[in-house]
Length: 207
Image (cartoon, rainbow, N blue to C red; front, side):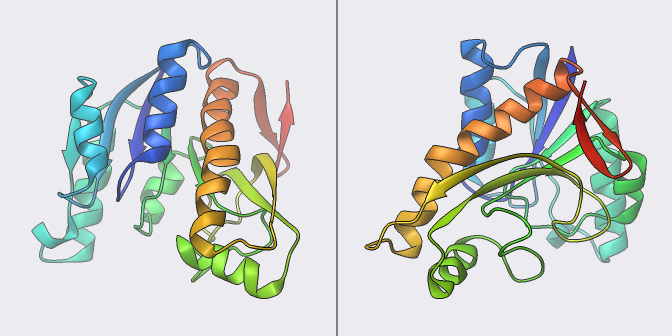
């Protein structure tokens, strides 16, 4: 059974999708061991508590230095003996120690088709604003393993979403979540839990 920890900063809609897919049996051989947030007011923590899942806040506001916060974050995640860490809207730059320790065991969801509209400054609503400004006809979401770069790790899954002429950043954001993010993030967890993918030479291959 894959022990999964989800890190999230806000409302936790992707967390909800993961929990629902686990409950329905669409994700197998995986269990949610903890939800961690850097934001004490994150509704994601309430979602976890409502399902009886341990919910922990590790906030940089509670530590004198960034290094102390990073140390506490690593210790917290280590304490749950996790096999996989899922970043589901976690607005924290991960310490390199964590990335190294959990190499190819941390995944992230990004609301675009990487390499488009990714990297520094491209998160949240800004991604969809940039997509509409550029006039793209297709956008989507990407699940990838996390490395030391920003949105540069090996790509696991992508799903395309059509852009409509009357889209606003908000409407596009919602449709990308509903049609892509909430589908491919749980699917990626299922693939990993069932040993169906591995990383070879910096790329994800099916087993």
